[in-house]
Image 1 (cartoon, rainbow, N blue to C red):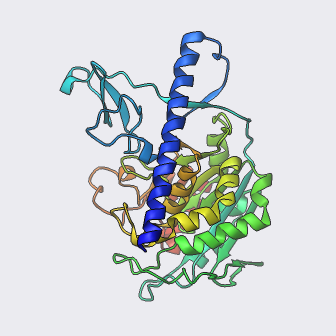
Image 2: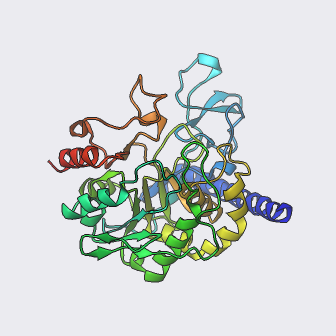
Length: 371
C-alpha cells in the first residue's frame, strides 16, 4: 500500500505541477488578449483549474487566481494580495474586490446538443434493509419516453441483466473484485467507483459517445429533462482543446456531483483513454480516501480526479441542477436536512431534480417537469 500511495502522491504532484503550468499559460493568454487586442474576436470559455492547482481559504491567491472551494473567487486586497471568498464587499477585511484574472481557454470547436445519456442500475446495493426502487424508476421514465430515454442515444448498465420494458440492461463484470469491497458507514451501500470503472470500459468499447456532442450520466432517482439540457447547452460556447466537464455544486472541494454528469466529447475521449492509468494511480486512494476527508471516493470523485489529472477543463454550472445532496441547493431552513428533495417540481426550472427514492414522488415530479 505504501508503494501505491507513493505512486499516487507522485502522480498527483505531477498532475498539480502540470496544471499549475497550464494555469500560468491560461493567465498569460488572458492578459495578453486584453493588452494586445489581437484575440478579441476569439471565442473563449471561462474555466477553473483543478483543485490541487488552486489556493486554499485564507491563502494569498494572487498567483493562482483560483480557489479550492467551488464557486469562490479570488478577490483582490491590494498590494499584491488576494484571497478566496464566496462574496466580496469593498472595504471589508481590506478587500478591493477586483477578481484576479479569470482563467480561460479558446473554444476549439462548436458543439450541438446531441446527447448520449446513461444510467446505472445496481441490484446489489449492499443495504438489504433499504428498499431499492431504481429499476421501477427507470421503467417509469422508459414508459413515458422521458429522462435518458428521450436522448438521441442511451444505455443502462447494471451488475445484472434486468428488464426495462423491452430493453435488457448491459451487465458489467466485476473483473477485479472491486464492486463489493467497502461499504459506506452512513448508508450501508457499496462504494461505487469500481462498478463505474467497468461501466466506463463498456462505454469506451461501444463508442456511442463518439457520435454525440455530450455524454450525460444521470442517476436513476433524478428527474431529468433532456429538452431543458439542450436549451441550457445551446448557450455554451463549445468544446475546449482539453475537453470540458461541468461542476454543479458550489461551496465544496469537488463539485462534480454524480446525479448529473455533463462531459463534452473531448472530455470523454480523455477520460476513457486514461481509464487504466487512473485505475493504477487512484485505485488505492479511492478505497482509503487518502486526502479525501469523507473517506472512500464515489464514482463522481474518481471521474473528476481522473479528468483533472489529465488536464480536462472544469467549468462552473451551478444553475443546472436542483440537488438535495448539494447543501447549497437546499432552501433556507433545510440546509442540515440531508434527506431533502423538491416537493413541488412545478417550481423547479433546472435540468434535473434529485433525489426521488420513491416511485410515487418520482412520477409526480416527472409529470410536473413534462407538463
